[in-house]
Length: 559
Image 1 (cartoon, rainbow, N blue to C red):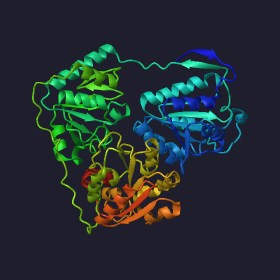
Image 2 (image 1 turned 60 degrees about the vertical axis):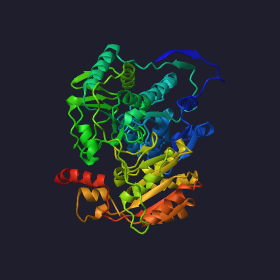
Image 3 (image 1 turned 30 degrees about the vertical axis):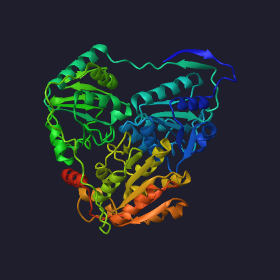
Image 4 (image 1 turned 120 degrees about the horizontal axis):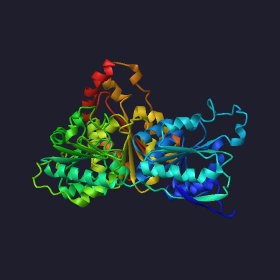
């Protein structure tokens, strides 16, 4: 809430647009993705003259995906588009960011207040001037229209604070005749975050600690919020202190280093590795931290977890067995558990933490398969790599990869929107220029948003894009077996796209030897993007996807 207001000289008074740009920088946002349009051009000109780097994309939804990935890597991001034709085009990207807790600031222009007199039919408008705002009210955690100079600064502060606090997208709409308006006073803003209820926190920590200490086989199951709220060190400290093995959900993959000695792997219910599934489900105390109970995370509801044996803590709720604790922050809960100390007396049954695949042995003449391709990629990964997986077997096969650091694996594993990976690679590479960004995408998903490679080429980013070409929607073929033409996509010569885009290098891959050579060459080339067009058998599939399809077939076909 604002505490008071201070007068300012004309020379010191920022305009509404200038104030917004300054506050974005205060939150560490150095880049902004989007596409200009007439209702946002004044702000765009201001943006380009500011220290923030304006990155023009080929499509608004691509700009949204790029901003989403940028936020996952850097902590917060910005997106700027015009009114309705731009704003409504980005609905899907913002919806995904909301579903998966990615803090994106969506900035959009709108008709000027003076233009709205007598409600004229202005271009881009749908139904009325409030329509776009109403749509995004459902897709964001906070929103505002900066239509009042007296409240504009306060509204900017309120909305940005909500973005940071809740790790979800927010909406800021600027009528184009308000961008250069200079309010008379500048409110001093204070955004106190309500503390945890001390008594509820004390009781929750004591009950949780007692449960863990008495348990025969406790397990930590970490989710995506551990990353979003920067709680990795606390979670690791808790595990090490109590010597509790760690598993992660698919959406939380990469939340901690997967080479950590206490890390078992992903828990995916019936579609995961049997030894991990059995160990987690045999636990008499599963400590679920920052984990969403989604169908994908729970192996399409094949998970067999007794809620009576679980401690379930997220940013939104805390439940220990059947007790609900209100107003307890996730960070405070984990921190206090660490401070209290977990003193376990019983030895922990051995956990499957030492599993490693057999050393990869190249078979140069063998046709490449999705499983062998992932095995070869796994050999290449290091601490400086960020893997971005699109939906389908790009995602399910990628779960076998080993991440060596944090935020190294990015995927829309809950919202599962196809076409995420290529624009997300743009966002991740922008956020971390020195990283080696590797995008894995199916041919169907690539044809949706793959031309965002144009921006990657323009910016000379050394992104490696691996296109898995099985001639169509491989996951859907498994979910609804049969010769259906709607699951086929038109074949492109993807390796020749660098010629069209005037930059980058393309490779055509059919065998393990060709993939090995192409990946090695791409890894050593930082002059621009590399496109590896991998030809796969139409019926090829990973172990995880095969299991998933088997589980889902009954539901999909019956409906």
